[in-house]
Amino acid sequence: MKRAFSLIELLIAVGIIMVLSAGAFVYINQGLQRQRLLRAAGGVMSGLKLANSLAKTRQMPQNSSGSLKVVESYFYNNKLYINAISAVGTTSNFSQESVGIPVDNSHRWFFYAGTGFLGKDAVGMMYSAGETAAITLSLKETQNMSVPIIIDAMGQISQGEVVQN
Image (cartoon, rainbow, N blue to C red):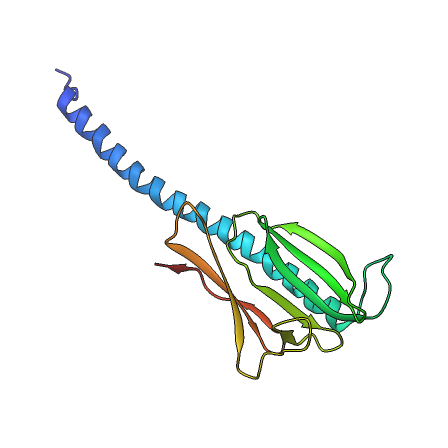
């Protein structure tokens, strides 16, 4: 006589599989959100490093006049803008890159020509030794995960670890 599984045994097995896959889905979703956050942080880091490099090498955008005084970086409409400000005060846009995630940050960062040092404004207010500027990126749909980006007074840019709140 062949023995088969009863309906109750099959339902229990299917229930166990559903519970395990629901748990796996949560971890997969967190992993995808973490990757999205890290990709956005990498884009912001690249943009800020570009701004710092442009300042150090005193590069001005094509079709702009004057010598470079400072490179300005800021977020607007989920894009990172990089502008050149000349010694006579004219502003020229270097680039505007989409960050990939919504960013709520109204700060501006200024990298000074020749040194790449970090300034608080375009008129010469510099960060002092030991001071840092921080950008914290987080996803709107999950406020429990963020990644900090730190800029020190010398213009060095580093990314922190993903923080789970």
